[in-house]
Image (cartoon, rainbow, N blue to C red; front, side, top):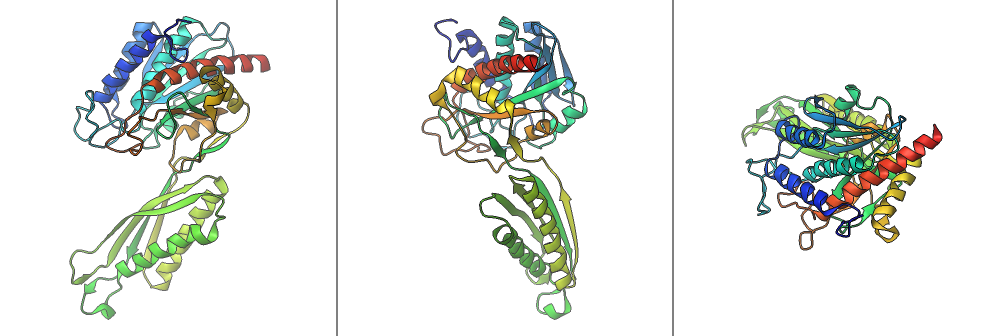
Amino acid sequence: MPDDALYGTPADVFERMRAIRRTLHADPELSWAEQRTMERIGARLTELGVAHRTGVAGTGVVADLPGRADGPIVALRADTDALPVHEETGLPFASRNEGVMHACGHDGHTSMLLGAAELLLATPPPTPVRLLWQPAEERAEGAAAMIREGVLDGVQMIFGGHVDRHYPPGFLAVHTGTVNASTDSFEILIQGRGGHGARPHEALDAVVVGSLMVTAIQTIVSREIDPARPSVISVGVFDAGTAPNVIAGRARLAGTIRAQDEDVREHLQASLSRVASAIGQLHCADVRFTLQEGTPPLVNVGRAVVIAREAAVAVVGEDNVGPLKSANMGGEDFACFLDHVPGCYVRFGAQVTGRESFPAHSSQFDFDEEALAVGAAWFDAVARRAGEALRGEA
Protein backbone atom coordinates (compact mmCIF):
# COMPACT_ATOMS: atom_id res chain seq x y z
CA MET A 1 0.00 0.00 0.00
CA PRO A 2 1.47 3.43 -0.92
CA ASP A 3 2.65 5.59 1.97
CA ASP A 4 0.40 8.42 0.77
CA ALA A 5 -2.74 6.26 0.78
CA LEU A 6 -5.76 7.67 2.59
CA TYR A 7 -7.72 4.92 4.38
CA GLY A 8 -6.17 2.47 1.92
CA THR A 9 -7.13 4.56 -1.11
CA PRO A 10 -4.05 5.64 -3.11
CA ALA A 11 -3.61 9.39 -3.45
CA ASP A 12 -3.97 9.34 -7.24
CA VAL A 13 -7.27 7.45 -7.00
CA PHE A 14 -8.51 9.94 -4.40
CA GLU A 15 -7.59 12.91 -6.61
CA ARG A 16 -9.47 11.39 -9.54
CA MET A 17 -12.53 10.81 -7.37
CA ARG A 18 -12.40 14.38 -6.10
CA ALA A 19 -12.12 15.76 -9.63
CA ILE A 20 -15.08 13.68 -10.79
CA ARG A 21 -17.12 14.70 -7.77
CA ARG A 22 -16.51 18.38 -8.45
CA THR A 23 -17.37 18.01 -12.13
CA LEU A 24 -20.64 16.28 -11.22
CA HIS A 25 -21.38 18.84 -8.52
CA ALA A 26 -21.05 21.70 -10.99
CA ASP A 27 -23.38 20.00 -13.48
CA PRO A 28 -26.17 18.36 -11.43
CA GLU A 29 -29.19 16.69 -13.02
CA LEU A 30 -32.61 15.87 -11.61
CA SER A 31 -34.17 12.42 -11.28
CA TRP A 32 -34.66 10.62 -14.61
CA ALA A 33 -32.64 13.34 -16.38
CA GLU A 34 -29.13 12.19 -15.36
CA GLN A 35 -27.99 11.95 -19.00
CA ARG A 36 -24.64 13.76 -18.75
CA THR A 37 -23.94 12.07 -15.42
CA MET A 38 -24.53 8.68 -17.05
CA GLU A 39 -22.25 9.60 -19.95
CA ARG A 40 -19.47 10.68 -17.60
CA ILE A 41 -19.71 7.43 -15.63
CA GLY A 42 -19.63 5.45 -18.87
CA ALA A 43 -16.65 7.41 -20.19
CA ARG A 44 -14.66 6.74 -17.02
CA LEU A 45 -15.49 3.03 -17.11
CA THR A 46 -14.37 2.91 -20.74
CA GLU A 47 -11.06 4.51 -19.70
CA LEU A 48 -10.70 1.77 -17.09
CA GLY A 49 -11.52 -0.93 -19.64
CA VAL A 50 -14.61 -2.04 -17.72
CA ALA A 51 -17.51 -3.63 -19.61
CA HIS A 52 -20.70 -1.78 -18.79
CA ARG A 53 -24.21 -0.90 -19.90
CA THR A 54 -25.71 2.57 -19.95
CA GLY A 55 -29.37 3.47 -20.31
CA VAL A 56 -30.44 0.91 -17.71
CA ALA A 57 -33.84 2.03 -16.38
CA GLY A 58 -33.36 5.14 -18.48
CA THR A 59 -30.23 6.75 -17.07
CA GLY A 60 -28.67 4.01 -14.92
CA VAL A 61 -25.29 2.35 -15.44
CA VAL A 62 -24.33 -1.25 -14.67
CA ALA A 63 -20.78 -2.61 -14.77
CA ASP A 64 -19.58 -6.14 -14.10
CA LEU A 65 -16.09 -6.77 -12.76
CA PRO A 66 -14.74 -10.32 -13.02
CA GLY A 67 -13.56 -12.16 -9.93
CA ARG A 68 -10.70 -14.57 -9.55
CA ALA A 69 -13.29 -17.28 -9.95
CA ASP A 70 -16.90 -17.57 -11.00
CA GLY A 71 -19.37 -17.56 -8.17
CA PRO A 72 -22.02 -15.51 -6.41
CA ILE A 73 -22.16 -11.87 -7.45
CA VAL A 74 -21.74 -9.08 -4.89
CA ALA A 75 -23.42 -5.81 -5.89
CA LEU A 76 -22.39 -2.28 -4.88
CA ARG A 77 -24.79 0.61 -5.44
CA ALA A 78 -24.53 4.40 -5.72
CA ASP A 79 -27.22 6.95 -6.56
CA THR A 80 -26.70 9.72 -9.12
CA ASP A 81 -29.51 12.29 -9.06
CA ALA A 82 -29.62 15.84 -7.70
CA LEU A 83 -32.38 17.96 -6.17
CA PRO A 84 -34.46 20.99 -7.27
CA VAL A 85 -32.55 23.32 -4.91
CA HIS A 86 -30.79 26.61 -5.70
CA GLU A 87 -27.21 26.27 -4.42
CA GLU A 88 -25.87 28.84 -1.94
CA THR A 89 -22.60 27.22 -0.80
CA GLY A 90 -20.23 29.63 -2.53
CA LEU A 91 -18.03 26.69 -3.52
CA PRO A 92 -15.74 27.26 -6.53
CA PHE A 93 -17.38 24.24 -8.17
CA ALA A 94 -20.97 25.18 -7.24
CA SER A 95 -23.83 24.23 -9.51
CA ARG A 96 -23.98 26.00 -12.85
CA ASN A 97 -27.53 24.78 -13.40
CA GLU A 98 -30.12 27.19 -12.04
CA GLY A 99 -32.35 25.63 -9.41
CA VAL A 100 -30.58 22.25 -9.40
CA MET A 101 -28.03 21.12 -6.81
CA HIS A 102 -26.31 18.05 -5.45
CA ALA A 103 -27.69 18.81 -1.99
CA CYS A 104 -27.58 15.22 -0.74
CA GLY A 105 -24.11 13.97 -1.67
CA HIS A 106 -24.99 11.74 -4.60
CA ASP A 107 -22.10 13.28 -6.54
CA GLY A 108 -19.91 11.83 -3.81
CA HIS A 109 -21.52 8.39 -3.91
CA THR A 110 -21.13 8.23 -7.70
CA SER A 111 -17.45 9.15 -7.41
CA MET A 112 -16.81 6.66 -4.58
CA LEU A 113 -18.05 3.80 -6.69
CA LEU A 114 -15.82 4.82 -9.60
CA GLY A 115 -12.91 4.86 -7.16
CA ALA A 116 -13.91 1.43 -5.88
CA ALA A 117 -13.87 0.16 -9.47
CA GLU A 118 -10.21 1.18 -9.71
CA LEU A 119 -9.34 -0.57 -6.46
CA LEU A 120 -11.17 -3.75 -7.45
CA LEU A 121 -9.46 -3.80 -10.84
CA ALA A 122 -6.01 -3.46 -9.26
CA THR A 123 -6.43 -6.79 -7.46
CA PRO A 124 -9.38 -8.89 -8.66
CA PRO A 125 -11.91 -9.80 -5.94
CA PRO A 126 -12.67 -13.46 -5.10
CA THR A 127 -15.99 -13.45 -6.96
CA PRO A 128 -17.62 -11.15 -9.55
CA VAL A 129 -18.74 -7.68 -8.45
CA ARG A 130 -21.58 -5.73 -10.06
CA LEU A 131 -21.53 -1.95 -9.81
CA LEU A 132 -24.86 -0.12 -9.96
CA TRP A 133 -25.22 3.61 -10.57
CA GLN A 134 -28.91 4.21 -9.91
CA PRO A 135 -31.03 7.14 -11.07
CA ALA A 136 -33.99 8.76 -9.33
CA GLU A 137 -33.33 7.90 -5.69
CA GLU A 138 -34.76 11.27 -4.67
CA ARG A 139 -38.08 10.25 -6.19
CA ALA A 140 -37.86 6.77 -4.61
CA GLU A 141 -38.36 5.23 -8.04
CA GLY A 142 -34.95 4.30 -9.43
CA ALA A 143 -34.20 1.16 -7.42
CA ALA A 144 -37.46 -0.53 -8.35
CA ALA A 145 -36.97 0.40 -12.00
CA MET A 146 -33.49 -1.11 -12.07
CA ILE A 147 -34.69 -4.26 -10.35
CA ARG A 148 -37.34 -4.65 -13.05
CA GLU A 149 -34.53 -4.57 -15.60
CA GLY A 150 -32.80 -7.50 -13.94
CA VAL A 151 -29.80 -5.85 -12.26
CA LEU A 152 -30.07 -8.28 -9.33
CA ASP A 153 -29.93 -11.40 -11.48
CA GLY A 154 -27.27 -13.63 -9.93
CA VAL A 155 -26.65 -11.19 -7.05
CA GLN A 156 -26.53 -12.72 -3.59
CA MET A 157 -25.53 -9.68 -1.52
CA ILE A 158 -25.68 -5.91 -2.01
CA PHE A 159 -24.10 -2.97 -0.20
CA GLY A 160 -24.53 0.79 -0.29
CA GLY A 161 -23.98 3.88 1.80
CA HIS A 162 -24.56 7.60 2.24
CA VAL A 163 -22.44 10.54 3.37
CA ASP A 164 -23.61 11.85 6.73
CA ARG A 165 -22.90 15.24 8.33
CA HIS A 166 -23.69 13.89 11.82
CA TYR A 167 -20.36 12.03 11.97
CA PRO A 168 -16.76 13.19 11.45
CA PRO A 169 -14.68 12.11 8.45
CA GLY A 170 -13.12 8.71 9.01
CA PHE A 171 -16.15 7.36 10.91
CA LEU A 172 -18.35 4.60 9.53
CA ALA A 173 -21.82 4.00 10.99
CA VAL A 174 -22.77 0.35 10.58
CA HIS A 175 -26.13 -0.26 12.19
CA THR A 176 -28.09 -3.42 12.90
CA GLY A 177 -31.82 -2.80 12.60
CA THR A 178 -33.78 0.08 11.08
CA VAL A 179 -31.73 2.66 9.20
CA ASN A 180 -34.47 4.53 7.28
CA ALA A 181 -38.25 4.78 7.48
CA SER A 182 -40.89 3.86 4.92
CA THR A 183 -42.09 6.67 2.63
CA ASP A 184 -45.77 6.54 1.72
CA SER A 185 -47.77 9.56 0.55
CA PHE A 186 -51.47 10.35 0.66
CA GLU A 187 -54.05 12.72 -0.77
CA ILE A 188 -57.47 13.59 0.64
CA LEU A 189 -60.00 15.37 -1.59
CA ILE A 190 -62.92 17.00 0.23
CA GLN A 191 -66.05 17.95 -1.67
CA GLY A 192 -68.40 20.18 0.26
CA ARG A 193 -70.67 22.97 -0.99
CA GLY A 194 -69.49 26.51 -1.59
CA GLY A 195 -71.39 29.62 -0.58
CA HIS A 196 -71.29 33.20 0.65
CA GLY A 197 -69.04 33.85 3.63
CA ALA A 198 -71.90 35.71 5.34
CA ARG A 199 -74.29 32.75 5.07
CA PRO A 200 -72.38 29.63 6.21
CA HIS A 201 -75.61 27.77 6.99
CA GLU A 202 -76.27 27.57 3.25
CA ALA A 203 -72.90 25.95 2.53
CA LEU A 204 -70.79 22.95 3.55
CA ASP A 205 -67.42 24.41 4.42
CA ALA A 206 -64.55 22.28 3.07
CA VAL A 207 -62.03 24.37 5.05
CA VAL A 208 -63.71 23.43 8.34
CA VAL A 209 -63.84 19.76 7.35
CA GLY A 210 -60.20 19.84 6.26
CA SER A 211 -59.10 21.62 9.43
CA LEU A 212 -60.77 19.02 11.63
CA MET A 213 -59.14 16.34 9.53
CA VAL A 214 -55.66 17.81 10.00
CA THR A 215 -56.18 17.94 13.77
CA ALA A 216 -57.56 14.41 13.95
CA ILE A 217 -54.72 13.02 11.84
CA GLN A 218 -52.21 14.21 14.43
CA THR A 219 -53.81 11.99 17.07
CA ILE A 220 -53.18 8.79 15.11
CA VAL A 221 -49.48 8.65 15.97
CA SER A 222 -49.83 10.21 19.43
CA ARG A 223 -52.69 7.98 20.57
CA GLU A 224 -52.56 4.78 18.52
CA ILE A 225 -48.84 3.99 18.18
CA ASP A 226 -46.41 2.86 20.87
CA PRO A 227 -44.18 5.91 21.59
CA ALA A 228 -41.14 3.62 21.47
CA ARG A 229 -41.82 2.89 17.78
CA PRO A 230 -41.04 6.06 15.80
CA SER A 231 -43.55 7.13 13.17
CA VAL A 232 -44.81 10.35 11.58
CA ILE A 233 -47.81 11.59 9.64
CA SER A 234 -47.34 15.11 8.27
CA VAL A 235 -49.81 17.13 6.21
CA GLY A 236 -47.73 19.22 3.84
CA VAL A 237 -50.46 20.58 1.57
CA PHE A 238 -53.81 22.22 2.38
CA ASP A 239 -55.37 23.85 -0.68
CA ALA A 240 -58.76 25.51 -0.42
CA GLY A 241 -60.62 28.71 -1.15
CA THR A 242 -60.54 31.46 -3.75
CA ALA A 243 -61.64 34.63 -1.92
CA PRO A 244 -62.00 35.86 1.69
CA ASN A 245 -65.78 36.18 1.47
CA VAL A 246 -66.39 32.83 -0.24
CA ILE A 247 -66.85 29.57 1.64
CA ALA A 248 -64.74 26.93 -0.05
CA GLY A 249 -66.62 24.02 -1.52
CA ARG A 250 -63.49 21.98 -2.13
CA ALA A 251 -60.26 21.28 -0.28
CA ARG A 252 -57.23 19.12 -0.89
CA LEU A 253 -54.85 17.72 1.72
CA ALA A 254 -51.66 15.87 0.92
CA GLY A 255 -48.88 14.55 3.08
CA THR A 256 -46.43 11.85 4.00
CA ILE A 257 -46.47 8.77 6.25
CA ARG A 258 -43.23 7.48 7.81
CA ALA A 259 -42.69 4.36 9.89
CA GLN A 260 -39.74 2.22 10.93
CA ASP A 261 -41.74 -1.02 11.26
CA GLU A 262 -43.87 -2.65 8.59
CA ASP A 263 -46.74 -3.38 10.97
CA VAL A 264 -46.79 0.24 12.19
CA ARG A 265 -46.75 1.36 8.57
CA GLU A 266 -49.84 -0.74 7.81
CA HIS A 267 -51.60 0.54 10.95
CA LEU A 268 -50.99 4.17 9.96
CA GLN A 269 -52.28 3.59 6.44
CA ALA A 270 -55.48 1.98 7.70
CA SER A 271 -56.07 4.58 10.43
CA LEU A 272 -55.58 7.49 8.07
CA SER A 273 -58.16 6.08 5.69
CA ARG A 274 -60.57 5.48 8.60
CA VAL A 275 -60.21 8.98 10.03
CA ALA A 276 -60.68 10.64 6.63
CA SER A 277 -63.83 8.64 5.94
CA ALA A 278 -65.30 9.19 9.43
CA ILE A 279 -64.84 12.97 9.39
CA GLY A 280 -66.35 13.14 5.93
CA GLN A 281 -69.42 11.24 7.16
CA LEU A 282 -69.65 13.38 10.27
CA HIS A 283 -69.98 16.55 8.19
CA CYS A 284 -71.85 15.08 5.21
CA ALA A 285 -68.92 15.82 2.90
CA ASP A 286 -67.73 13.58 0.09
CA VAL A 287 -64.17 12.53 0.96
CA ARG A 288 -61.83 10.60 -1.30
CA PHE A 289 -58.68 9.15 0.24
CA THR A 290 -55.80 7.99 -1.98
CA LEU A 291 -52.67 6.24 -0.74
CA GLN A 292 -49.51 5.92 -2.78
CA GLU A 293 -47.10 3.40 -1.33
CA GLY A 294 -43.45 4.39 -1.44
CA THR A 295 -40.38 2.55 -0.25
CA PRO A 296 -40.45 0.12 2.68
CA PRO A 297 -38.37 0.64 5.83
CA LEU A 298 -34.66 0.03 5.28
CA VAL A 299 -33.59 -2.59 7.81
CA ASN A 300 -30.09 -4.07 8.13
CA VAL A 301 -30.11 -7.66 9.38
CA GLY A 302 -28.10 -10.85 9.17
CA ARG A 303 -24.69 -11.89 7.93
CA ALA A 304 -24.35 -8.91 5.56
CA VAL A 305 -24.23 -6.51 8.54
CA VAL A 306 -21.41 -8.51 10.12
CA ILE A 307 -19.47 -8.42 6.84
CA ALA A 308 -20.09 -4.68 6.47
CA ARG A 309 -18.80 -4.05 9.97
CA GLU A 310 -15.70 -6.20 9.47
CA ALA A 311 -14.91 -4.25 6.31
CA ALA A 312 -15.44 -0.95 8.12
CA VAL A 313 -13.06 -1.93 10.93
CA ALA A 314 -10.47 -2.97 8.35
CA VAL A 315 -10.69 0.47 6.71
CA VAL A 316 -10.99 2.93 9.63
CA GLY A 317 -10.27 0.90 12.78
CA GLU A 318 -12.45 -0.40 15.60
CA ASP A 319 -12.67 2.98 17.38
CA ASN A 320 -14.12 4.66 14.30
CA VAL A 321 -16.98 2.23 13.70
CA GLY A 322 -20.27 2.40 15.55
CA PRO A 323 -24.06 2.28 15.25
CA LEU A 324 -26.30 5.14 14.21
CA LYS A 325 -27.16 7.67 16.89
CA SER A 326 -30.77 7.23 15.78
CA ALA A 327 -32.57 5.84 12.77
CA ASN A 328 -33.39 8.33 10.03
CA MET A 329 -37.07 9.05 9.42
CA GLY A 330 -36.17 9.94 5.84
CA GLY A 331 -36.58 7.32 3.14
CA GLU A 332 -34.02 5.48 1.03
CA ASP A 333 -35.01 3.29 -1.90
CA PHE A 334 -32.01 1.01 -1.31
CA ALA A 335 -34.65 -0.72 0.83
CA CYS A 336 -36.16 -2.08 -2.40
CA PHE A 337 -32.95 -4.00 -3.10
CA LEU A 338 -33.05 -5.48 0.41
CA ASP A 339 -36.53 -6.81 -0.32
CA HIS A 340 -34.87 -9.11 -2.87
CA VAL A 341 -31.37 -9.94 -1.57
CA PRO A 342 -29.50 -9.63 1.73
CA GLY A 343 -27.40 -6.53 2.18
CA CYS A 344 -26.35 -3.62 4.35
CA TYR A 345 -26.50 0.17 4.10
CA VAL A 346 -23.96 2.29 5.99
CA ARG A 347 -23.18 5.94 6.67
CA PHE A 348 -19.87 7.62 5.80
CA GLY A 349 -18.88 10.35 8.25
CA ALA A 350 -18.55 13.57 6.23
CA GLN A 351 -19.07 16.47 8.64
CA VAL A 352 -17.54 19.80 7.56
CA THR A 353 -16.34 21.81 10.55
CA GLY A 354 -18.36 24.99 10.86
CA ARG A 355 -21.12 23.75 8.56
CA GLU A 356 -22.72 21.18 10.86
CA SER A 357 -26.01 23.07 10.88
CA PHE A 358 -26.64 22.64 7.15
CA PRO A 359 -28.52 19.37 6.64
CA ALA A 360 -28.97 17.30 3.52
CA HIS A 361 -31.38 18.94 1.04
CA SER A 362 -30.22 22.37 2.26
CA SER A 363 -29.03 24.98 -0.24
CA GLN A 364 -25.77 25.15 1.75
CA PHE A 365 -25.13 21.43 2.12
CA ASP A 366 -21.57 20.22 1.60
CA PHE A 367 -19.50 17.27 2.79
CA ASP A 368 -15.86 16.62 3.63
CA GLU A 369 -14.28 15.02 0.56
CA GLU A 370 -12.16 12.77 2.78
CA ALA A 371 -15.31 10.63 2.83
CA LEU A 372 -14.61 9.73 -0.81
CA ALA A 373 -11.50 7.82 0.21
CA VAL A 374 -13.32 6.05 3.04
CA GLY A 375 -16.22 5.13 0.78
CA ALA A 376 -14.08 3.72 -2.03
CA ALA A 377 -11.96 1.72 0.42
CA TRP A 378 -15.03 0.36 2.20
CA PHE A 379 -16.77 -0.63 -1.05
CA ASP A 380 -13.58 -2.43 -2.08
CA ALA A 381 -13.17 -4.19 1.27
CA VAL A 382 -16.82 -5.20 1.67
CA ALA A 383 -16.99 -6.65 -1.86
CA ARG A 384 -13.95 -8.82 -1.14
CA ARG A 385 -15.17 -10.00 2.26
CA ALA A 386 -18.68 -10.73 1.00
CA GLY A 387 -17.26 -12.64 -1.96
CA GLU A 388 -15.12 -14.80 0.33
CA ALA A 389 -18.06 -15.45 2.64
CA LEU A 390 -20.41 -16.37 -0.19
CA ARG A 391 -17.85 -18.59 -1.86
CA GLY A 392 -17.29 -20.38 1.42
CA GLU A 393 -21.04 -21.01 1.74
CA ALA A 394 -21.39 -22.29 -1.83
